[in-house]
Amino acid sequence: MIIVTGAAGFIGSNLVRALNARGEREIVAVDNLRTAAKFRNLVGCDIADYLDKEEFLARLGGLRGVRAIFHQGACSDTMESDGRYMMANNYRYSMELLEHALGQRIPFIYASSAAVYGGSSDFIETPEYESPLNVYGYSKLLFDQIVRRRLDGARSQVVGLRYFNVYGPREAHKGRMASVAFHNYNEFLADGRVRLFGPHDGYGPGEQSRDFVHVDDVVAVNLHCLDHPAMSGVFNCGTGRAQPFNDIAHTVVATLRELRGEAPLDLAEMVSAGLVEYIEFPEALKGKYQSYTRCDPTRLRAAGYAAPFATVEEGVSRYVRWLAANPQG
Image (cartoon, rainbow, N blue to C red; front, side, top):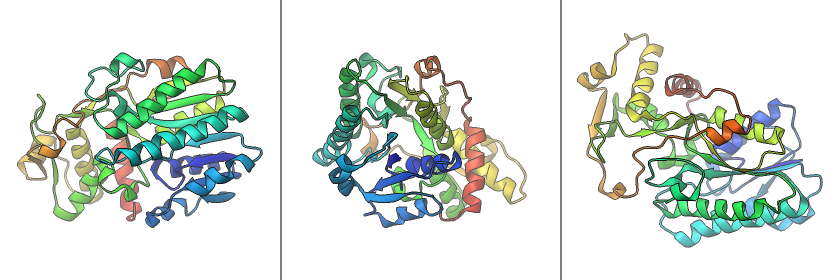
């Protein structure tokens, strides 16, 4: 049996599908369907059981034959201001699962986040680079810190994956926390143009840059960890490239224009035609926003993960085509 928490969520549902593709059917999907629309992400998945996240904790000690726990469930809203909720949901819940996994020697692979780095200009898995800008980032950092303290005494696998900016299928339920690619796609369909942030923090219009990673690559890293039980620790999970938001917008618009049979345009031509616009940087985000992220993949590569990661141009184009074929996202 394999347990996936956050199984109806973005990364979790893609992970369940990838496990199914490998022939895995004994999967217990754990989630909170208070946001009921997430059920769509489980449609088509082959699972052995579904448990609410609270019921799961109550029944955890009675589950037998668990081969691995993929802990993908969390509140990922970086604008959430209720710190008590965030720490209970992201930190304390994770601690209960970790204690069980270590006690039963069950491989435990969990979702951390690049939000732990905050405004750092270097993104390396050591404490001197870790300074989160919000309570979401802190909830992830504290759990990583506890994992580090426990690794020396652990007799089973524990892996934390610090996801950078993930995009791809099955994120529609995330609302404002969905990827910029998802929002650009829907904005262009609705309004015939996309909007990006203007100049801020020393970056020109649309030039704030992130390490954008396709969800298929994130899932592949998770499966690599499952296949290599000697691999333990906290690892970055990103492409190792920082690309500007302009690249996302250009690829979204270019792909949609291609699907419509329209002529290709470069970014400057899109801006001139009003297809890409820039807006003033929001006051609410100042001091809380990462203008630049770039995964340092050194530790992940040293642990044996050798597969390439999709570029924005490759991954976003593939995602736009998927969205066009799956309007509910």
